[in-house]
Length: 552
Image 1 (cartoon, one colour):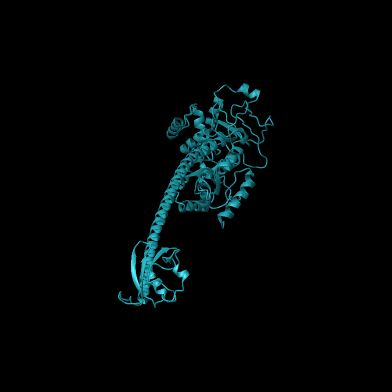
Image 2 (cartoon, helix red, strand yellow):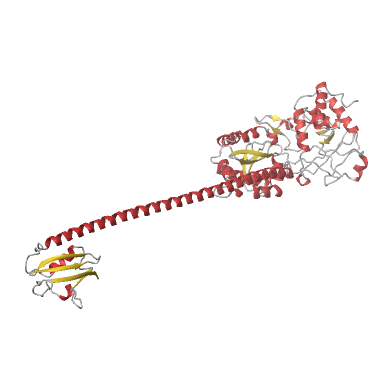
């Protein structure tokens, strides 16, 4: 029968749209992928695109189911079985028929046999292809402890027998199915079919498949009843290391605001020491939470890059209360672009690693790595954010240097201006001081002149009245002054010699600075040679005498 006879018109239309969007040429693979996702077209497209961009390496494989689409007869058999069971649309599967044990319907059209009693002929988990026209068995190494197995691409080689039986079909990228961590839920906790969940025939989910991969009894990274951010982050690190080991980037202990300040401002440190902030948002409801945390975030490549070039701040938004608290902090910091970025992603996209930078006082997300990214993709996104922030830091450093240079110029100009003002003030003060000194000197001289004049007047007044020319017993004294002037003065012979010296002083020639000489040969110093208190008659002063006044 034709492979598409079992499809309704809507299913055929969805199949066509899925192939156009995802560019899958293999109709059987596209059909099986849609059936495995319960014909949820958006989920199937998202899963295909996410898997196409995932470069997770072989080291991330725990228990992998490898998908091969190599037997057209097997695909047709599976479709016939789907047609026979299409009437059962209930989510509950009571069990598989004894003649056709369905395990998982895997993208590519092959079925994993769920019969656990059938052993593998190879202990190392190699693929075994049975000759039965109705079954294909794909085995993988299983964990006896019940731990969750990771689904990833595998390039395992077939055994020689298997290679002989399988027809040569071009290799295609496979979808990967996780054994336990494949389901996801939306923000309200309801079941949300995802690209990674297990599927049953006709794309109907069983009760087991309808359950979320999030377990309420699992110890949360951040409890919803935390009392402080410091307590919450210490709990985050303790539980994170218990789950995934200690090879993780160093997490910043402090509030989101403190982390932003430490990373983007580097208080009291130069601009070159500023670093972008990497916000790691964990979500236990996400399919890739364990894979991303252990194989990507804790990988040496990503961890060392975050340690050396970023400040990493973690938070767990599994609990609704913690998600709302994060949004509250984001709103308080007025970085709504980050909230809008986070709100765009459903739970299936988590965990997220958001790189936050600051440009011209605006905080914004520059790149986002999500759960389906591999280590190299995360490193590339981190490097993109780092390079962009380095460009911003270089521009800010150049602006800072220019600002410092302008400040230096302004300071130099201010210093020169202050020096000029100081010089002007000093010159003004000197002129004022000289003016005051000159004024004081003039006043002093005026006072001295005034005092001298007063003293001369007093000296002149102290002399007796000059006798008349016809009076007898008088002596006529001619006085020659230093300036060449001469003056004649009459004295009574009964007057003391001092009156002659007083007369000379009354003309302005102090005896302290001048000498008086007689006309004798040799000349005699009047002050030193005579007793000034004796009368002219006693010392036999000549009736006519010429004295000379000179400076000492």
